[in-house]
Amino acid sequence: MNEELIVLQLHYYLKGEKNHSMDASIHNECERYFVQGILSLNKYVNGALSVEIYATEELGGIKNKYKVLVNGAIVGLGALASVAQLLSYFGVYFTNPNPNNPAETLTRIEVVEKIKSKMDSNEPFTEEEFDYIASNDKDLRKLKSEYFKTAIKDKTIESIEVNEIESNSDAPKPLGIINYCDFQKCVLPKEEDTDSNEIDTIIYIVAPVLVKGRGNSWRGICDGSPIDFKVTDKEFLDNVYNHIISFSNGTYIRCKMRITQKVNLQDNTVKISRDVFEVYEVNDDENITLYKILHKKKSKIDIQQPSLFDNIDFN
Image (cartoon, rainbow, N blue to C red; front, side, top):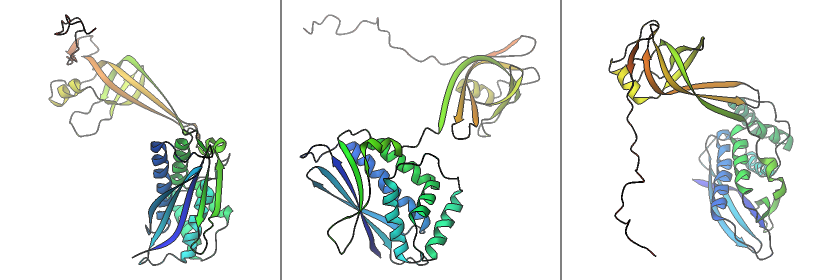
């Protein structure tokens, strides 16, 4: 049996006194990220939370109410007040701009265990403690970032406020509010930079993949350096798997390879992937062409081909 734990209200203040409508696709996408953010807290409470939503329109804005329910049969969560407090601080954190300096990176297990132990102690959270935990929760940080990345597209939004609706009061309790001009501060900086280029090259084959399904990581030597690469040229692979093409010392391929370099902007680590997507021929060190790879040509529409409508004047 589920019982109501807390009601969070998301209030979109819109520009213009009589404006109470916003872009539906943006609204729905924002709503999805907000709900996912609430549900991401389930890892701290053993999956006990669920969410129901109901929306109301008011002059000058839109209000969405999220009724957060807890599974009444669940045990070992500590005081329910701690869970409610966790959700309240979620509302506070959600409207705070991201800190300039991210908190230290903890493992998922460390974050979960830290917050569970705090809840089991029945001691109230402080805002500083929740900010620390939330800043290390990669799921929550990403969902918050995606929410505001979406919300910033609707320039009719003036501000967004998160409130708590208390059962014994008609007046909502403000948890946090953020103006449109600060939305960008909630979007995480780009974490990865990708660069890709295609080259014509020669690769000496060291360790081919001869059987389909055995993985796609080949090893070879290109420009004097050992490399790992994958092959996606279907015609070439069919010849390899059907044992039409074989490899020995000095066998190399002339091919077109796509090199993708991904740079992690947080720690400047670089990952390089290589994809041989077209093989022209297979040779050996004696410059003897062993195999030429015949590729199926994609059919193209001949724009010069006569049309049934050529002689019709549509004007």
